[in-house]
Structures are given as structure tokens and as C-alpha cells.
Image 1 (cartoon, rainbow, N blue to C red):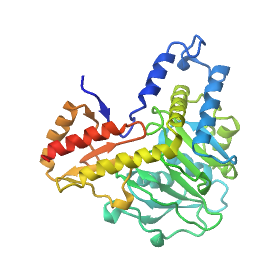
Image 2: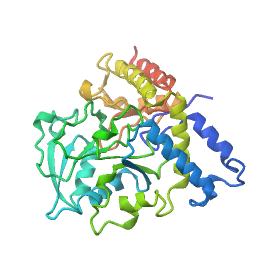
Image 3: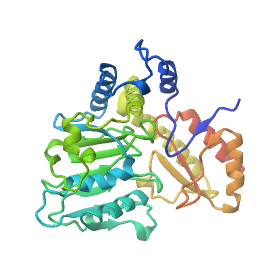
Length: 362
């Protein structure tokens, strides 16, 4: 049987060890006589799963004690609405939110936030076809903005920040890290809020992680649904409503796996090696093209194009025959895309590189 490598952008590949453990636990978790999917979220069995997941994530990212970790639902797109709902309610005047527009997902966040506040696009990479992050020296920030929203890795466009913005004291950065969270160390203390959908680098769809500094709680708009009010969720330890229990369980197994691999610093070294291997193959000649400026190329999501796009279907068909799946690019940008998250082994990237070279006739 051909070895399968899944390059999907999300829901995405999971570590084989995690899937094997989940399969072993499916009918009877640790002698409880229950599957995790059958457990009460308030029962001692699931509470122990939840507490371990929260503890391991806090350790992996060195989350400071004055930050809350929330396990929520709705995905990253929902959080793009939930963020302004939670952060602008304390303003006497209509709030303004700053955005840096670096691709498809920050574009979605701008549209969502405009429902609840005035938005200021402080900088945009649209004129350059989203091939990099606009230099911070060109950003036109609002002096009294409620916060600055950035998407630190654009899943569709393949643009990743290589810096943390420098803002005046007291200013707040909100970062959508959906598609590269846990792929590299992060100084959480430099952000007010970090959030991300789990289905890219953490676990199955249905879970969203929010890491929020405590002083930002309790500032929700009156119209914010109670289940999405971060303070209520935090006060109830993510149990205000029934959380996505099985997704939390799988995420917890992924956190354990990451610790066994050496943590996020070790994963960063692996991810750099995988990305360098793949980009080198794409840059070898002009048969393929990656349009992102080299300093902003994502380590997680690698979009690329065949110079002769009439060969696209043949490329995808050949890749499928070799067990290289989900390489078709997002419909909004076309081309190809290889997502090489933490769980993608370097052997999978090497298999893709071998095929790239074969298809190009190298």
C-alpha cells in the first residue's frame, strides 16, 4: 500500500501516535467503562482530561499566570467576531480597532469586526498581492485604538510574521495564530489575546483555543452572548456550556505528544528543516513559483504555482497516485498548497520534494 501523506490545511494531519492512543481508548477510557465521547463534562473523568490539557498547554507555551486559557467552540472565524464583542464594551465612545491586512484571514477579521466597531486598516499588503507583511514603519495606527489585530500566519496566502509588533505601552495586540500555534516558541506576555482554531496544528475541528490576559476580561458588549463572554467562560473554567469534550481530549493527547518530542523549541527546529527542504525544491528553477517574499514565507503553509498551469490537473493526479494528498490550493488563490504542520514528518516533505523533482523532469 502506498504511504499516505496528508497536506491538508485543515482539518489536518494528526500524529500517528495520537490516533493510535485515541483508538485504544475509544471504547473504554482508562478502565472507566466509557468512551470520552460519552462522559459528562462535569464528571471526574473528563475534568481530569481537561485539567491535564490546560496544564500541558500552559507549560508548552510558558503561559504566564495572569493569563486564562479558554477552550471554546466556533472556530477561528467565530473568534473574529467574539474578539471585538469582548474588548470594546467598556468604551464610552464607539471604539476603533486597528488591523494589518496580510491576506485572506485578516481580511475576514476586518469584515467581522466592522459589525461591532470602527475599523482602521493600519496597513495592507493587498497592493502587493499579499506577498509579505507591510513594514511597521508604514503602519498608521490609531492612538486610542481598543487593540491591534494581526494574523501571524495566513493559512491561504502563506505569509508568516517574522517579528512581534512594537507598540506603545498599554497598547494591546490580538493575534490569530490558528495555523502556526505550537510550531515555534511565543512570548505570550507580548500579546493581550492569542487565539486559534484547533484543526490545523492541534486537533480536530470543533475546538478553539483562547489565551487572554486577565485584565482584558469583563469588557464585553452587552449584546455579547453569555457563552461567548470570555469572563463568564473563564469564571466557569470553560464549562459554562458543554465544551467540545472529545476535541479537548485529542488536543490533550497532542500536547502530551509535543512534550515527548521536546516541546515547541524542538518542533521549531524540525519545522525549519522541513520548510527549507520544500522551498529549496520550489526555488530550484522556474518550473514552480512561490510568490511570498522569502523573509515572510510561512513554515506551515506553502502555496506554490506551476508556471504552466495547464499541467495542474496532471500534477494533482500524479501526486494522488503517490499518496500525496490535499495539495490543491485554496479556491480563492488557485495553484497548489502544501501544509506541513507539526505532525507532518520530514519523510512526507521529502516524498513531496521527490515528486516535485520528478514532475519537473529534474
